[in-house]
Figure (tube, rainbow, N blue to C red):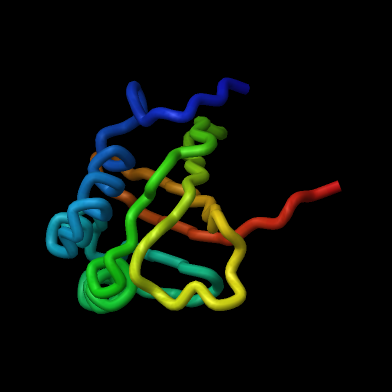
Length: 124
């Protein structure tokens, strides 16, 4: 299993997602998903463009959330898994510093069919 901390060589939708996120581009971010796309952000589901747009505008562009540093990037059975240190203007009370979230991308052609975002804890 290869591990890297850059997105070079990874599928365009994954690179474009983080570019849109870091540029606070909610329209560009939403355009990466198909009509029935799914974002599951910390156990909350957002289905379809309208719901994903509300989520992006409130929790990414609204809170100025950025992926400050990629800590792990790897392909896994057709998916792409990206762990990144997250920063922004959100309430950080009680959160770890740095906050590392893992993004699990399932792609369908040039679209992100499913994105699951989790704040993982170390396993055994």
